[in-house]
Length: 195
Ligand SMILES: [Zn+2]
Image (cartoon, rainbow, N blue to C red):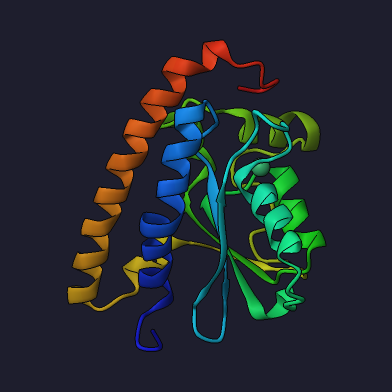
């Protein structure tokens, strides 16, 4: 995998590893968010997971992934790992990633996408209500980590690769569109506090 760029690898992990789990999770009534942890050294997958708020409203995709990661019992140093989130993390998940010691996270959809394309406005509402921050108001580069939008990385690829990754992005978004429709049509039946 060493000749694969990070953007290409992260899109593959979303498409092949996270999305199948999320399709099951949404089928059960959970939200559409997922995450994964990879090794920096060879971009191999350590663990992928998906939202499980029906069990516990704190099991966002990211926190649920961290829970599973620590349950693996492999003592991998988080400084050697990449954190991938399908959606820009909420403040709880961003803090969890920080407390776990990661120096990075990468995301596919933005907070604005979660609000506008997924009808899930809670990330931005919490930023505003709890922290007094407008969209984009947190520090994407800071002493703990640097965060990256995968779409921005795709733009830096050479043309041939960029075209392939954009086609893959379209494919991935279509699957999330379908999942979002399923979640929104079922969420009246769940008792997730912020559904
Ligand atoms: Zn979260």
